[in-house]
Length: 180
Image 1 (cartoon, rainbow, N blue to C red):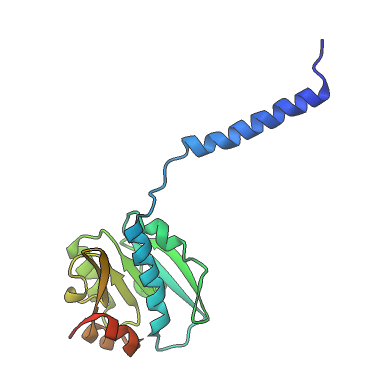
Image 2: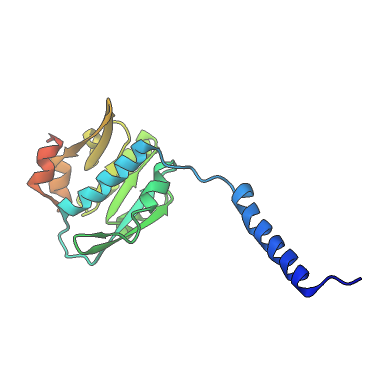
């Protein structure tokens, strides 16, 4: 005895739902951001509101170098607006010409030698470098983020900022540890 048409449709619908839901369970797990990653991302986003680039920009490209759970949080600010400029967030590999592609560069989980090489290659360019790598600002990066207790503090390397041609507002400077 043949199955009625409404039963066939019901079985097909059930099959489609099962197949689509199986993707949720068998897809590779994305690295979820931690509460610390969310705070760092919020800081990065807020920082963009206090920086002026030498040339007026309609959009800002935030490039991420390195792997880690913060990447999934930084992607969440893609297409957000900051002072009338649209943010475009993208992940790059270590060999990418970030000096030509990025307005903001976030370095995460990059070894110190590579980090130093990258920041040296960007000296004098209007690229806002930010990292949570230890002693980043002390080694020539523009802004270093560091956890101290339950807070995320940041350090600004004033001489690197001055050399970059970027202007960081005095309001932001007053909130940071500033090194010369």
